[in-house]
Length: 156
Length: 277
Image (cartoon, rainbow over all chains, first blue to last red; front, side, top):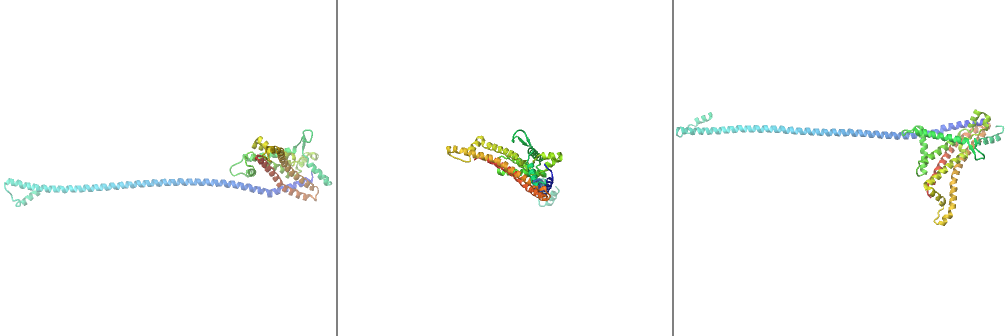
């Protein structure tokens, strides 16, 4: 096997082939490879994004549930305080009414006392006249002694 | 060599068509082409190592460039198998991938400088040893390599046929297809014809597989050798470089195409063998 220019020629040709491959074939392959990488990366990124969005939505739901719960609590509290107010108001009204009734009753009692006293006075006057009649054994002219009797009654 | 260009070229080509041969016994058959075997083995191992490393480090996340490249190859092969073969692809795709990548590797040796092994031997052991050393490093330009591959494929195809139809069903189809008959007597008459046709059909498959690949690669190598003849003189040196480069660039196409054809035909043969007639 003679080694001569032949090998040199083949080496130069090989160098040209390598250059050609590097220049025109490898970029195509590289492009395909990078495209695939990008596709996978995009897919993963999309999945990650979807996961993050789901997490966001979950958080939002949790916040909303919390808000709703707080609102419900507030409503309950307000209702309770309103009920308390109503009860208080009713109690106050009842107390006022009771006071009023008591005052009215007291007034009536006073007026009844007065009436009873006046009635008693009338009775006492008549009794006194009858007693005096019996004592003097004669009829006293009621009208003649009326002034005296009235004075007597008033003194009782 | 320049003083006797014609004789020099003939001798050059004849030298380069010699394999590194070791005789194991008497006769032409008991010989081994060490160069074809060693290069095939090394390249096959290289392919396995490469893909194994990438598969071991494979991630389901964004792939590295190396992984993406391997993925593209595997996906390409799997798509071809899926389009042609409708069945369990678990063993067929790896087979197709192995065939494709191995043949690509073996064919690619054609692109390397033809005289590089000789130059290496000369640099190490001197011109005299180099003159008596033969080393062809394109295994697919050796009919033994392609025939071996094709025969392996042939047996795999037979196995697929027998597995799909059973040994009895496979044998029955050999003598009853493609000519069908309803009459028993006609059936029996047709049997030898069917059998002959099937045997020819089955045998033609590995032969065509092996010859196609061998013919293309051998022819390609021969063209490289003829172009190498142009390097003998200074006047034809530059055209020689030009032709060599152009042929090499064109040869990239042949290399991939032949590997692809070998793979596709293997898949088609397996798919056909599994079909019921």
